[in-house]
Image 1 (cartoon, rainbow over the protein chains, first blue to last red):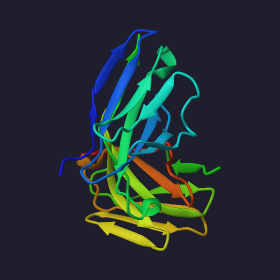
Image 2 (image 1 turned 120 degrees about the horizontal axis):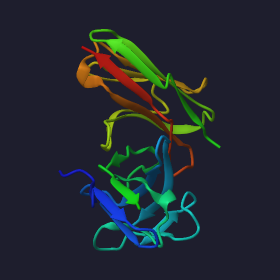
Image 3 (image 1 turned 60 degrees about the vertical axis):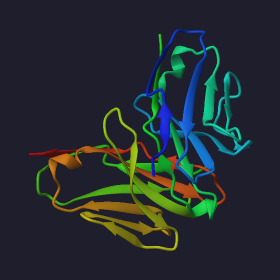
Image 4 (image 1 turned 90 degrees about the horizontal axis):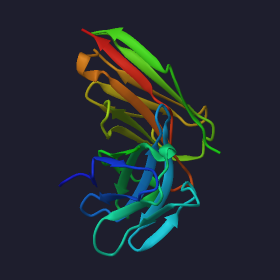
Length: 116
Length: 112
């Protein structure tokens, strides 16, 4: 059973470009969470999605950031018009549907975004 | 709002020592608490998950305890090895919350 997969592992963008980060949850998991780790800071929650639904986006900046988890394919975190402050490690986690509130979250290796 | 604190921020010990990492959280209404390991430039590896109804969990040389009423957890590492060198993160899932709240971690260095 493959773990949570994220790609790319490293992404370099110039200011103003778009960044697309992909996350494939573990097999059998239908819940996806995105977290951001800024340099020298702890991980902060961004958004929680189920298939075709955004359940909680309370941690996501209101502008330039969006997330989706389509019926088919990976979850996508999209950052438009990137700025230097978006440079961070973005982690995706997944959990199975049953007993949602109590389930363990399994993390991917992260995507390290560098904005020049 | 849940806040998670980890002390110390960094710790160096000689190989073979037993050590304790501390985690405290402000809101005791939690579903569970997870301890993770993060190696430099890498992702998170889940070490132990303690449900709110449990007091401790053990895996190999690791033992994690949970005192929900006082808002504390400890991670005990026995007979430390250089390969244990990493940052250890504590995270809690609040009751009714969808996400984990993370501490800023303890950076452990085990000296051969």
